Image (cartoon, rainbow, N blue to C red; front, side):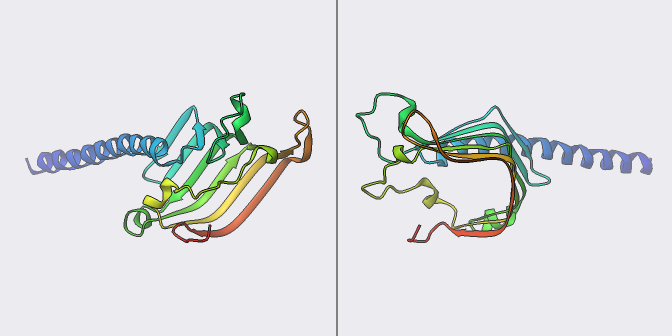
Length: 192
C-alpha cells in the first residue's frame, strides 16, 4: 500500500507542476500582450503575427513584427496615412533570450541576456521627422528604471535612409550581420 500512496503523491506533484507551467505560460502571454498594447507609447505602432513565450527559459519571441514610428506631435495638414511615419521596421523575428525575472519583479530593471533581430529591414525618412515642441511623457516612466542587455545580435539586416525626392535612397547597407555587447540604459534619467 505504501508504494501506491507514494506513487499517487509523486504523480500528483508532477501533474501540479505541469499544470502550473501551462497556467503560467497562459497568463504570461496574456500579460505581455496587454503590456504591449498599454505600455508602448501611442506614436509606436506595433503589429505581429505570433507571440511565443517560454517562462521556464525566460524567452520571448515576436514573429513577423512590423513597427511604424510617427512623430510625438502630429502635423494635421498631412493627408497621406503613411506620410505621418518617419521610421519603418520589419522583422522576421525578434527574440528576447534569458530575461531575468528577479530583476524585473524586485528592482524595476529589465535585464536580457540576448536580443536577436532576424532579417530586420529599417527605413528612415529624416525629412518626415519633426522634433517635439513640448515634452511628451513616455508611458515607460511609470514602470521600469533600468534596461540592461548583454548582447544584441542582428542577422541579415538592412538599413536605408531615404531622401525626399520620390523615395530615393540617401544611404543604405544590406545583408549586415552585427553583434553589440554590454549596454545599459537609465530610463528614469532626466537626460534622454
